[in-house]
Structures are given as structure tokens and as C-alpha cells.
Image (spheres, rainbow, N blue to C red):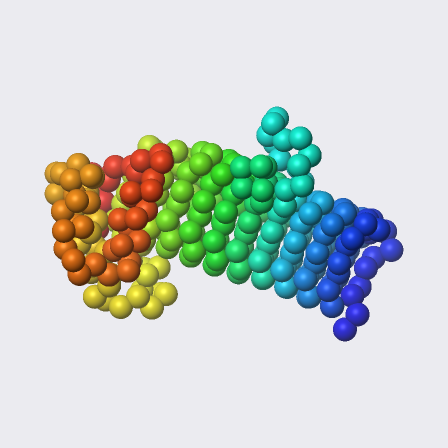
Length: 266
């Protein structure tokens, strides 16, 4: 099926590749060196910046800006990129900025929903099947694992890492790393138990969920500091992949992980 391009859309003549069955709405702007995958819909007044790649079936709503230059004063127009996977939805007036020479790209995985008025800073790396609710503001270099859900109006400090399958409640700022599989809320951000509902919905076996519970009980309820708890857990030679994910995340954390809430339920 042929693509449908509104006559008022502004499309650069310089190396723009448009797939099949693409819709580009009124006054949309497509800059140079852009690739738009099959089935994408770019609505009115959206902007796709230079060196941006959209996977298949992406939807950019009115006023969305994807691939504009980063808000980094060191940026000197290097040829950095913005890459979106398949089935990414970017709602109204979101901004996603291209990378700097730190990572050379800002990347969004497959099947990601970014709700209205969010900002994704330069060099962020968003995994697959992520949901980011309205008005989340994400600094540069943030890493978000697969199946993470971030509530509305959450500010996220630069360089923060959020582990896979974590759930962040709305309205709470994130300044430290958030380990995988947990629920987090409160000010300052604390850990309020396992994301059990999400794990059950995604088909995790009960025995795996119980292993993850045991690990977080050791880390947050044993009265040991985190490094001692991790050392003791590692002494068990029979570690599941999920438990190893948790230990690797903590080992690689550069901003530390937060404390548990006194009311937390593991």
C-alpha cells in the first residue's frame, strides 16, 4: 500500500527513506538522513530530527519531537542518532533527544508507550515493553530495563539505572538506581516489596518469584548491609538467572540502590 503524505508536510530531500503504508500528517517535519519503517503514522506538527530511525508501526502523535539536538552544551553537531524500535507510541508533545558522543545514540526498544509531555534525554537506553506515564522527565544517560512501568510526573536523575520488571509509583523522584523486579515509591524513593502482580502477569513461575523474594528479604530485612547480604547470597552456588540479574545489577550500580521502606512488604 502506498504511503500517504499530506501536501503541507516538509520532508528533506537529503536521504530520507520512507517505508510502505506510512502516513505523514499536516505540517509534520522530517529532517535529513531519516528512516521511517513500514506502517508508521506521524501526525500533525510532529518533528523527526536528523539521523533518526523509526522501526515498523511507530506512532508519533501531534507535536511530538523525536531526534532533536541534545540539551548538552558540549554537543558540537556530531553525527549522533536516535533509534526507535518497532511499535513505539510517542504521545502528544513528548521530546526525545538524540545522543552525544558518550553513547552516540538515544535508543528506544520495541513495544514502548511514552505518554504525553514526557522528556527522554540524550543517550538514554530504554528497553522493550516499557510504559512511561505522562510528564515523566528523564535526564541524560538513563538506562531502563525491559517491562519497566514508570508512573506519571516522575523526574529521573541523569545516569540512573532502572532494572527490568520494576514498577515506579507516580510522582516520586528517582535519584538512585532501582533494582529489578521491585516496587518503588515514597520520598526519598524506597523499596516497597516485589512487583509480584507484574511478575505473575508475565508468567513467572511461583518458585522463581519465591527465590526473588528470598533475595530481597536477605538484602532489606536481614539487618546486614547490602554488600554483606550480596556476598552471602553469592555463596549459594544454585542461583537462578533472575537472582543473578539482581546481583549483577547491584554490582554494576554506580549511584547505589535505595533503602527499604519500613512498611515494605517483600
